[in-house]
Image (tube, rainbow, N blue to C red; front, side, top):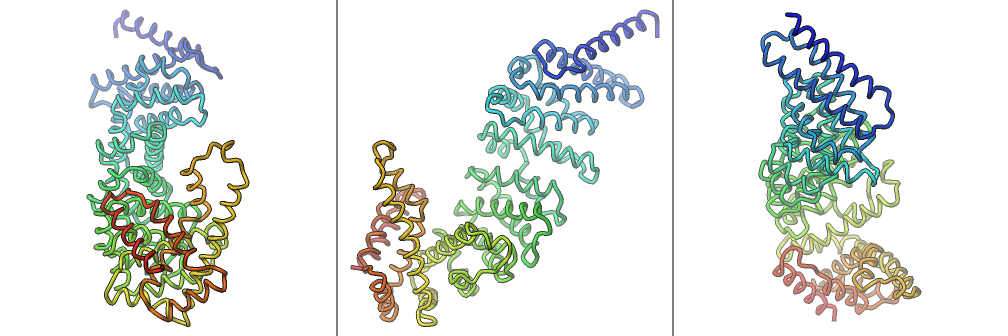
Length: 509
């Protein structure tokens, strides 16, 4: 090295030491110090890239520059405490430089970038929102979504450090979607993240990243019909069934594993919203698997009922399969309150949710099975043991009716003009109090009456009289249900549903 080059290198080192001294020990950053931090990082990044280009086959020649870059990346964590500065730092290359580091050949540096981004994009303080959103938008423009997902595939989770980097990459994705919900569709459209997550949750062994993958998958599916369809088209329904099948005869061993299992069932329920995925569920023998899980009476019992409820709602083929594979006995045991006892079941809200799900499931059966031997078998359940299931229905009717009446009386005792509550909001409050479940119970009673069976009709009339009720009370509930049927599934389905309800109301006259 000649004297001039040595002098230049010495000056450069002195400048870098001066910059580091200016920012070391700072608890709170101002914009000037933040800019120095960012410029120092970018200089280290540039030096490292130049060293790698000059000596691609000699790692020893660029090792020092990578250590320096790693240290400078760690120092950028100071920025996490000053998100209000992000809008000023983004034009200077904050997002683009960190995104480029995600592609670094050294996995340790790519991991450091993911860890840093997880910190910078994580904020619960509303006053920080504008700054963090500015960074999020810039990261998307810098192709960070694609780079993060690419890293998921190239990192080896057999290495603890790289496994941690996967966790940080998932955290960045979660943070970005939380900041900009529309990114849930964008990241699945532009990348292979759904395929990676699906493969990850199908892995047999449980560990932290599998749990996190299940959580991210649930987030991507929960409000996105497009993602629900995408996952179905890549055989995702069968993949999720494989993932939950591991727990058909055993309980999760830890609370984290239990949370993961709940996430998987959340994914299943979300993915069952599109009609095409309901078909895939039936074809993949999902109905049979859920019945097996119910029979095993493990902790996934209630989740299996919830999944069946989603699968059978407005989908007759699933209802028919349920009857064909002898699911009625298992379902009606739950309907009668014979549920497995464990820690979770002792929770009152859990029992109530389970009760509402099984009522919805039975209502779906009546809506999906309208004739033939299956209908006869379904109706036959309400004749068994001296019509005990009709007694149970009336018990539920009275309980939910009392709750809705109490809520209605509470409204009537208030000055609704002062509350500025319109009819729609009042109706929604009644739904929250249990009106929808009451409507479903009334609908089941109506289906039973509509069958014309003398024994069941006699039992219904007796129980109504004993509770000082008449068929007109049931009709009133059904009329309100009829008038509020939505058109979520299209105007034709709405018209059909209203037509069937009209028939039941007419039969009760």
